[in-house]
Image (cartoon, rainbow, N blue to C red; front, side, top):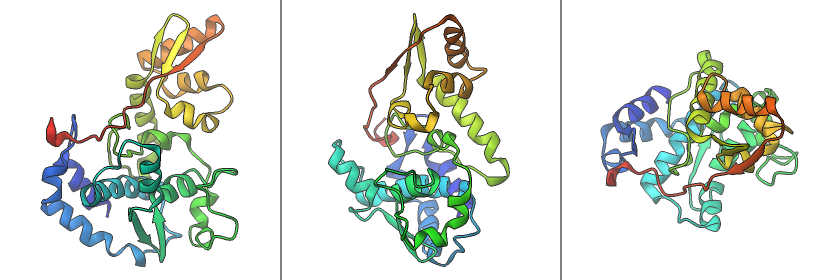
Length: 244
């Protein structure tokens, strides 16, 4: 699956986004679809977080090609990511939506989140090793939901996941965070998932982006006192390079 996903990325992901027009009719896409049909039979206890990240990004590509991107409304996005539109895969004998992969598995089913697995959900048993791992907030910079403001699509590997996530976080902070006066303007990912980054989001941004101009600017600002945190508008338009 990961090799097939890499072929998709190499052939159809550009600096401008994803070329869905060529992706839809490509050999790489058909090969990926054929391999995805084997997902019901995998061992759900044996996969690492790189598998789930790559699966999420591939599911978005697949669903966008087949169903089209969701309309720019909260209701349409909820239906798309929650699986109501059919954007689901069967993995290890269980149906999973994009929300299941992101929130229930990669975010480890946080308490109080309606997208988490309930305590009696049978999927908790099948995917217990994933749920038992520590949560890594850097996954937010690895998941691409198909919107223009999302992090870019890349392939992740378990053997280099820590380094890959660190690089993804630095790149995201470097491109999506700016400092003007005492104000830090960041992606709304830091607003929507603020609790994933702890009580001091600016300090988390500085740590994640250490070594980048934006991250170091936030760190310098924190040394001087109070920081005002603002959030940029999120561009939900599709990351479709076909029309660029």
